Amino acid sequence: MQINDIIKIIFWMQILPCLAYCAYAKGNMYPLDSKYIKYEELNDNLDKIVQINPDLAQKRIIGFSSVEYLPIYALQLGNKNASEAILIIGQHHGEEVIGVNIAFTLAEILLNGYSKNIKQQHLLQRYQIWIVPTLNPEGFRIVSSGILKTKRKNNRDTDNNKKLDLRTDGVDLNRNYPVFWDLDPETDTNSPFYKGSEPASENETKAIVELAQNHNFVLAIFLHSSISGAYNEHIYLPARINNSELFQKNLALARTYADATKKDYLKGNYEVFEGSTSEVGNARNFFFHRMKTPAFLVEIGGKNKRGQSIIHPPNKTLIKIVDKNVNALLSVFYKLDN
Ligand SMILES: [Zn+2]
Image (cartoon, rainbow, N blue to C red; front, side, top):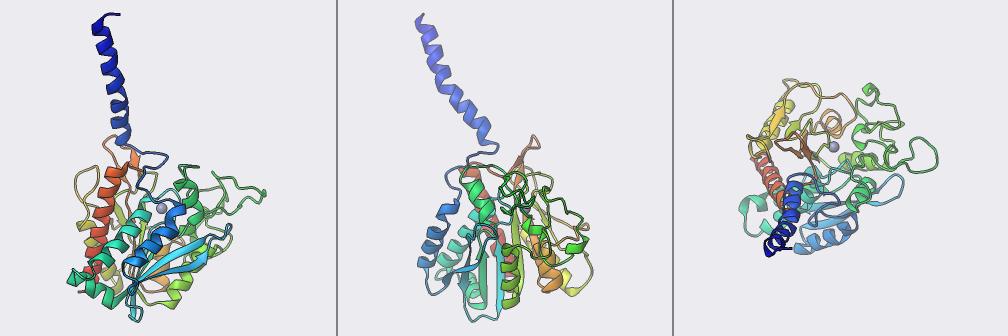
């Protein structure tokens, strides 16, 4: 072999892994990249956040998951005696993990900013801010630990065959709330959208219903990142749009989020979808129609130029997405606090 050939081989040996990485880096990474929070880290991460400012942060367990009895954690931030509360749920669907990272970063920023930023100080004095990083610890554990890339539902043995079929079993927690449940036709237990055997049949949903009944939530936001790619970078309002004052307030808050958030891969900002949305037992319908709380869902995952849905981007993109959405959440809180 000539010296030129050896140089060529060395060149390609160095360049090929780089090319492979670059192609990969624009898409999804699974197992998840290193900055994604894992199920096993939840408890320690919550403890670390509480330590930033123990007077303003409490770790709570608001319930246990339906099958494995995993704790459903929440952070209660701000003034414990405040009459008004805000709720952020980072995750309902197991593979939609970005919202879990957003939930933790939001808590860190709120607590770190308390002594420096007068607007943040006011937020934590006026409101209790409840942050539930994941409402679906069973699905989150499977996806974050590298067992399976997509696991939307909890681990309920919905076909009753006495074993867990990871790809088909489970209840879609965002179809299980006690509102419009009868209107949802999805009774196929294997469907990714299976609504459960009855309204609030699942412990996870019950935990949120109870939380809602015990606190005066004035705003509730739910973070998602749908793998289908069809809904990405949009904000979804409760069903049955109308001209009521409550609905207009809801719309204004959703628009504030959209205006503050640039799309990740395409041009422009997030958009509020103003067409009619599903009359099913989802969280935003429950909060808006049952609790009279402004509520909306944010679909975070981006779509790249090839039309591929990206919900597990590499660290660098993840961090950008998290920062952007935390800023958007703060903008919505400030708007509410006006
Ligand atoms: Zn979702």
